[in-house]
Length: 184
Ligand code: ADP
Figure 1 (cartoon, rainbow, N blue to C red):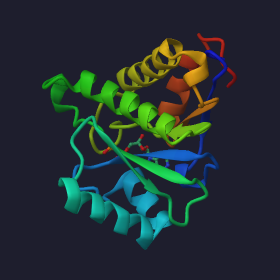
Figure 2: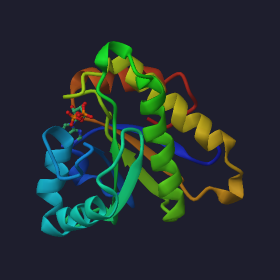
Figure 3: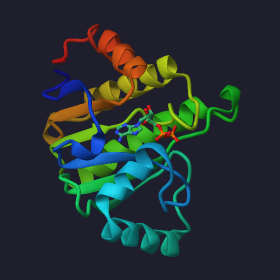
Figure 4: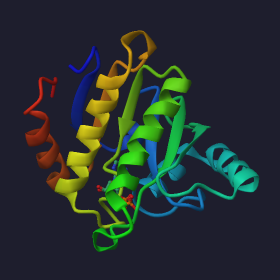
């Protein structure tokens, strides 16, 4: 528990997770791609894609580190936050700051939509090749410090899920989260 928010790690397909908002590791085009992005678009369906197209027409996609929100189409969640993680790029171009920004901007957007539960995939650790250990440290520390820094009355989120798909990430998150007083 961090300030009345429970952090949980699960090994699951994020399209199956029943929360208010799931986060998508999108790309700048917002039009879908491989990995988790492809799975979310496939399960979300054409309405989700249509909203992404509208955002793209309005603001030309989404920049690395930023986040946009759509409804969730056929998914069990109510909304999808699409954030664009950085390509690892051998650690150059402030990639750690950009990954941190993905988590912060997603949390801020989730708060704006009064979400009580939120599920993150392991952003940038697939096709974008970010080292898994480092990405997990950034994810967990950013979420915890963001929740810590928010005034309690402002906070609507009471459950954050870190949704792992591969064994490596699952084991990394399990061992990292066990250091905190969290429910796992
Ligand atoms: P990125 O381009 O940000 O690296 P990927 O989708 O390639 O995005 O990978 C991000 C993470 O999402 C990886 O750890 C991958 O194992 C995981 N992943 C892939 N498919 C799913 C899914 N259906 N549900 C949850 N996580 C997934």
